[in-house]
Image 1 (cartoon, rainbow, N blue to C red):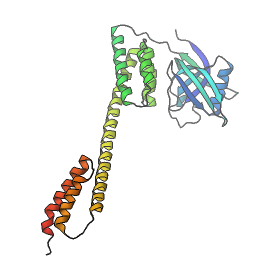
Image 2: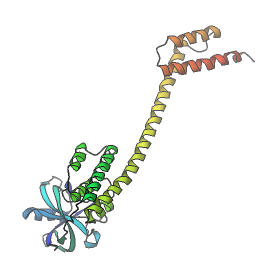
Image 3: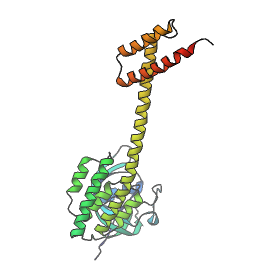
Length: 286
């Protein structure tokens, strides 16, 4: 049987909070600050739900997703500019049924708590293992992912908690995260999380290829610039347009051999020397 309760409402822009997820939030809207103050006066529970449009400053019932999460306020700090930094921990999924604006400035949400479905058996265990392995692959390409996150996920032995932990840590759209929050079946949620990671892996692999190609092109450009500068240095060392072209060519060849150049620079210098030598007989007066 589902349980109902009423809690202060805190609408969220561009973020979905999952059960067992600890997240810092910066709160500036008057109604949101009032909701936090009301929560701190009581049992520190608050209802978090994502907005459909993050640009909406005063969201009503139809501007919010139906499903959110009951959370506990762990820490609250009022900043000099009037905003509030708060640390919250998601506890349980809940659906809001009615919003009621209170006289002291906050919105009270009448919510219905959603019971977690169990997930046991061989299929769930195998899927959990696959999801953890996929997350390891994802984290290797996502350089922003802390190494300890992978370790922590590997230690989770509950399908529902694992699905939520993965959902909280993958970089997908708010609407995709919301679909993961809405799905009550942990096995289906794990399958969805796996699919989202697969899509993100494809994007990350393409990004890696692009970065590698750009890096190689930059290195090639820098190398060519370096070699050209070395060739100019050789030409300055020998001087241009002097008398006695035959002696000059011999001196040039000898100078190239004597100069301390990298193998690549020396090979390029020799190639240019051969071209110059081949052109020399054609330089007679017409």
